[in-house]
Length: 485
Image 1 (tube, rainbow, N blue to C red):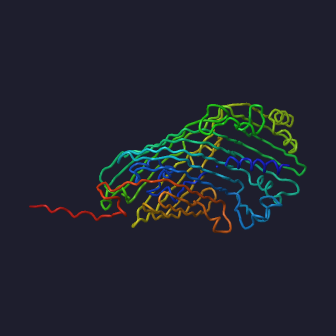
Image 2 (cartoon, rainbow, N blue to C red):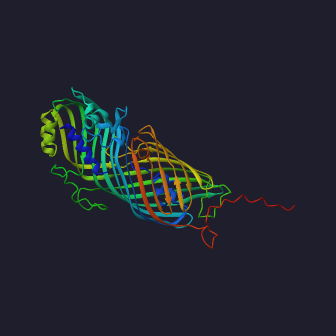
């Protein structure tokens, strides 16, 4: 019974989808359209495109540090749970993190370069996260892999753990402006302000949980303090009917949430004399450095059902299953077993994955660049919400107006492993992956893919009358003027 309960919960969470990658193979390019906004809103300023019409895009994947997946054994786990047949090879981590799945759906939008100093963009998208953070490995193994359970049951302990499944839509307005330009030095700044509409969330946030499962289907929990909240449970305490009146882009009725988000950033470029500052169709910098804070904000749900369970006691998993769909019955049952269950409809804020992003881009020669990007989590994982895990990505790329090819190499702070990806762009059509190892190797901790399209109208050389330059021009420094004595 306990295996069925947790398996069902995890599968249900997957419905809401979830740590979207940043399209590292595409977003770092100079002709990347609005995809560069995911790294820094200041990237809009002095853009290589005059106008971009976004047609749409999708980014989807899974990631974890609990177990490697062996796709060659995908049929081996059907009779013994997900862990059977060698499908999963569990790591040595006692605590684990899972993003399964995460998704980012980009809707039509546009950007416009007003003049040399100003640019704006309007973008829309859906985002979804299903994230387990700092959970206990023993519990997961016992549910997914029966061979991991001993004949005498098992123990597990978790503190400061968080499970949040969240889906929301957003409409964003971005603005960037050149703030300093003198000689070889160039600085631009940008901001994105977005209106978010919460579609649905389900979260479990635990300060502490010590428990022992026994083979007679009983659970003993000590020193327990766990909170649950969701807007997909109606006021009567029944599961499943809370999303009935939720709108995708507005919150005039129903149980949906609303909130605001913001990104801020700045970019510095070193532009030596051998780059033509008037050629708006080509790269102008030797080195570019950027700093940004993204996804500041939260979604507020005014009619979310909240539950807090705390205390010490014993219960049967079968009895728990019989009462879990009605919170009035669940409260009465848990109170008789030594636990306290506090329930009620309350205002709940769900955080979005705030992150700090540092980047550096170096132009080597002849359309070849090397980019380094560091992403660090800033979100509070002690509250309901989602967060990114730290990563350092180095991306060599070949980048021209019509074609880009990149190979992002990432060190993940979550898995303590390397990831490899590939990104390609042909005009305004792009596709690729930030984590493609599972497709080319036997085992991997995750996989990711993305694709999308936009219609670009690129800028021309300022002094060009006959048309746009066909290639980037790198001119030699002008000779010193001869002074007449």
